[in-house]
Image (cartoon, rainbow, N blue to C red):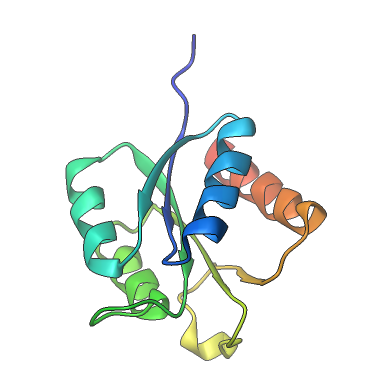
Length: 124
């Protein structure tokens, strides 16, 4: 049996994180969870199998989700990153290259579209 692809969900809102983790697990992904960028970096350092990072922008701590996305892009370049927020919409130039933005609240269809894109990128 093929190994499940690993995804890290970085979200400080517990219910939002739970919902996204559940959706990803139902789609066949293995998930890891973090509520801050520092926690996410620690998880990424321990789990080299993580191929995808979903991150919220606004989080507690010294680093927000945009800074985390740039950090992940520099340190682990092949990692696929998805950035989301319900409060701010970053300008294109603020985002790392090839990182989609998912506005909250996102419906299942929009999330499915993003997941299909992620799956296609993982397969290539």
